[in-house]
Image 1 (cartoon, rainbow, N blue to C red):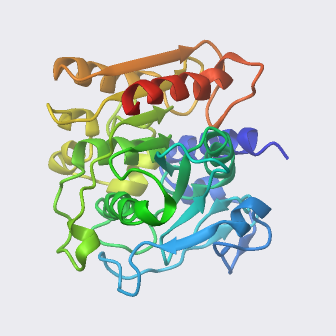
Image 2: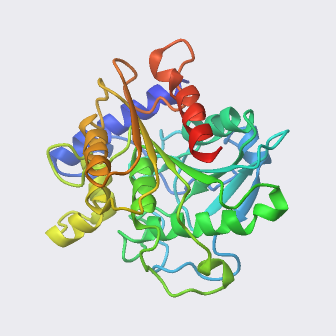
Image 3: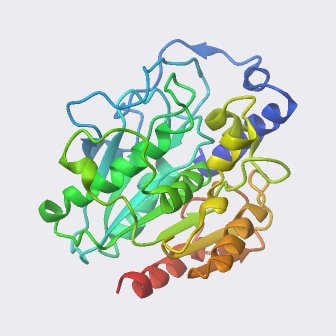
Length: 332
């Protein structure tokens, strides 16, 4: 099965249903499985199963309410992880390190975490270049956590701090850590780039006092808008709830929070993206330019949504080469 195509179809189905009114309508007619796919289940890619798992909150209860599992569509691909009771980082090590690390944040409309095309595949591409890659499995806001709009960002902040705490053991410079995010994971990465110092919970250990600011960031077909006409309706509803007020929308609209300390950013998007309009990227570009912050962008005629590392023989598949060169300039 082509999981990139399957993911595009799933997001299109779910996003369209949310515009019509409910996720339940999108799932109508599908059998429901009472058990969710646990992280590390045998159906996940071997590279994922073999990767070291680092729990984010290490022996303490993660801040943000109580986990409640939700029903999972029986036909949802196993690589679309749900039921994230214990958020974690999966570690992918290079054969020959370059002294740098990446925090990779997969997408999934804040409804699942797409760990294959936006996790394992990305890790394979960048470990080949010498990066130590940490793929984040973050908590999903619809699984009982409160306040729901803060929990993913709390995990992303903690992930950056955890990565820096592991720098010595893994042989990279803690100052040379970038973030890459896809789709809703792009929204989370953009939120981290603009809200790395947002106080979401009381520090509980020494790691919580480390810097959560990425050195730079790459946003791939990111969700940026949290209101019409450009938002992805399902991502917005899952993160903010069905009836968010103006203050909450503004708080979780990362383009509104770009400032003089926002790290350099590169964006990649396709003009034919049917799920997340390309104008999401231009919103962030305009905010970066207004703040006089370094920004680079690459738009492709074709590619759709959810292409991950992309086919090597198609224009959208060149974004990893463009990002590698851009990262060299930022981190070199």
